[in-house]
Image (tube, rainbow, N blue to C red):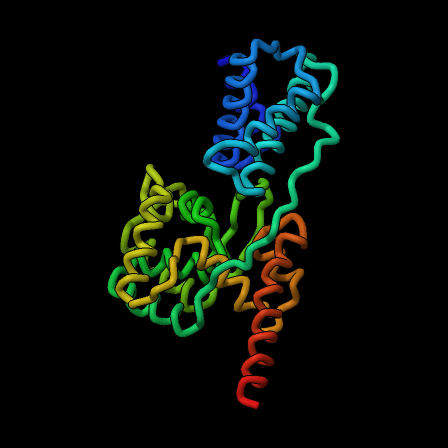
Length: 286
């Protein structure tokens, strides 16, 4: 079982080219399923759709109830696992095919107001590194993993842009840099004496995502922002502010690196909600 899990992990990483976070999650889900098989004395080669359905029912009845998003991911993990077993001739068919994922209710993402973003950046200006981290998260809409993996060679200053190499879904993209941010990044690289192959935040060892989380929380608290903010909130804010300013949703999709427009369209609900709130205020005043 350990060998199969390792091979499956390699398949996800090198063939499917999924993000490290997704690989860890999928492997963990499959490991949990394999424990279920062992507990019930079921051979992997004998797994049928009925076994999958029984397992899903068990997950749904846990004391710590899974939300629809987590359950959908576990089903996707198993679907990928049995696809891999088919490719390697361990299984003739995929017992997960035809099993529908639960409906996921898309939650409107949290985001910061322009005044809150301005405060966040102003409070961080005394620390060059922290300011640049927050600026890249907001002005470029980077994921935390993309920020941590960013190398000096991924930046261009003429023209000014950042290249996100092998991000989530392994889709490379180019995001323009503002002239002010490009100038500050260039100064930072020069003052730190960084080489092209160095990580932008770090040198040979990249910064850990938990450090980025702490930095975001630190300045959020300093600003007196009461919202529960994390690094991804700045990415949500980037997308929301662009749409509020009338930027075409397909441009926003490209800047975010979303494969499907439906993923980006969740931010339209934020803009729609603002319209409803505006009308409600008008009615209250009337």
